[in-house]
Amino acid sequence: MATPVASTALTALATDADLLIVETSLAEDRQQAMMADGRWQAMTPTERAGKMRPATQGHMTLEAIGKTAAEARVKTVSLSHLTQRFGSDDYTPWADEVKRHFSGEVVIAQDLMEF
Image 1 (cartoon, helix red, strand yellow):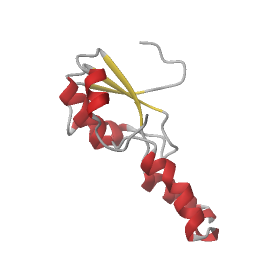
Image 2: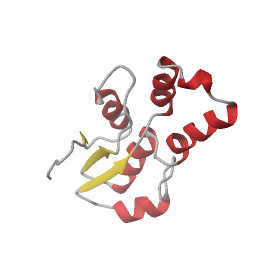
Image 3: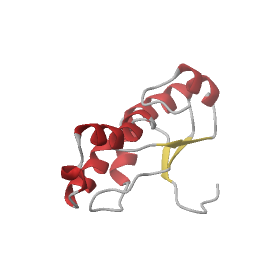
């Protein structure tokens, strides 16, 4: 089950894991992309809320990922299922945000990546 906040069940499951693969999203990036091409402005408030819900409720925040990984003593975190960033394909800032709360390795997942 995806959660935007740290979960005690996930922390327990991930305890001492070599690798934690977790999906994440930034609602702000999703909104900026839709604003840039006019989709956001054309939506009703209900439609906007429906578009933002998956980004805010269906994925863990970067902070929650870092805190969960640190508490679980995970060795490596892999960020996956990434939403498209507005104006960039560089996810380094996302990894950096996780590292603010976690001292282990943070990897940005790529298609067909092997561990």
